[in-house]
Length: 141
Length: 141
Image 1 (cartoon, rainbow over the protein chains, first blue to last red):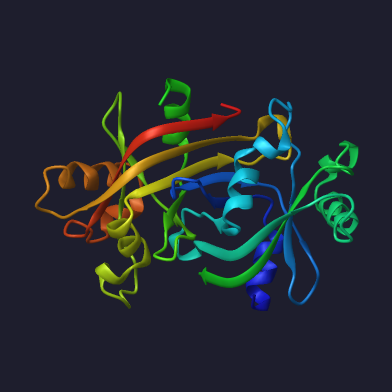
Image 2 (spheres, rainbow over the protein chains, first blue to last red):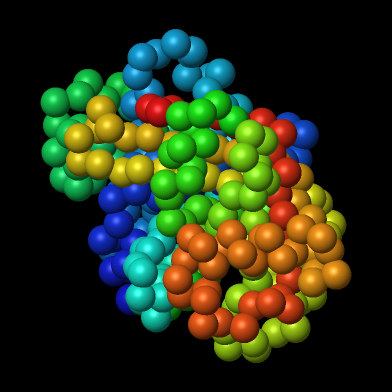
């Protein structure tokens, strides 16, 4: 990711995650996310669903990622002045990590640093999606 | 789509379109869109890319849709008050229509009604993506 793209992604509060369903069609969900690392960061997002009506392993995004780890994430800025439209798309490989993974503590810390909302939520033991970018495209950045 | 979902989708200025690339991974792009029809509307979005550095048929979303018409569209509302987070995901079947299609004139009219920006743009002859929804999921609506 180039520096201006990275700055734009860092500035955004919400992204949309596209995964592939078992029938090969795309599925979308908005995610809160943080970047972990400086020069070549990964995206992290915690499974904080509430109420917990389904077990983690049955969440659509979890089932999809386990079957097909290639995902896409987009952040964008909409403006009625269309010369200011902008987006960054990050294609990446997703994996799920638990509290036993060395990246888990820093991921939770990064999310809590970005989102005060997480500081009072018990997410320390929650699975985290880690997305390793392999291609970035952008427009208007 | 239920009435509250429909109202939410109508209120949004930008959506994100997920398509499937030839290698089976998802691709994302923000789109301006309008709804056409009342009870069971389709989503329409015009190819207004500028500058026209690539022919229409070579645009990623066009190539993807021609190969795999199943797409997903998401609109969402982010709020720092997380009790107000909301999204609607529409899964649908996409097709491209030209000015010879009877839906083209009303599609352009719907887009110009929603976006004043289109009124001064020569989009009358531009291809339009028409997405027929087949499943809607939502959260916080």
